[in-house]
Image (cartoon, rainbow, N blue to C red; front, side):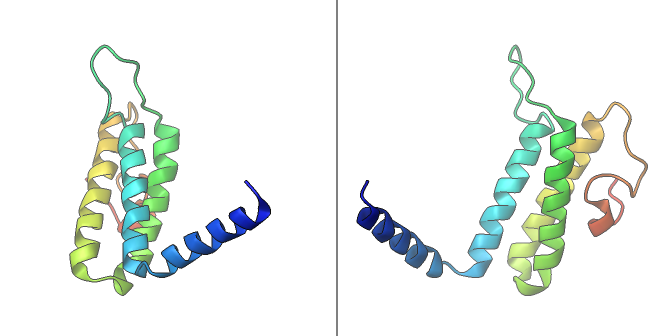
Length: 118
């Protein structure tokens, strides 16, 4: 690819992103974090297949998701924030259920942002 073609592609990508409302970017990032956390909690595991569970990675993803949802909630409508909070709570509960030694209530991933989940 020539430098000119790369520059034109970068300009097009920048213009495409500029047209996307912030709420859509926030929701898309949150859904990606939530999906990755669910996979790392083992929710996508198939019988007879190797487990994809990695609770250390899930904890990081859930913390990032909780921070994003908590910070963004005042700026996005309740119709966007509510399903994100529900999904976050679901992966927090899945993490707790998958843990062989669950964290104390209020100390699990993301709970410093969301409060206790049980």
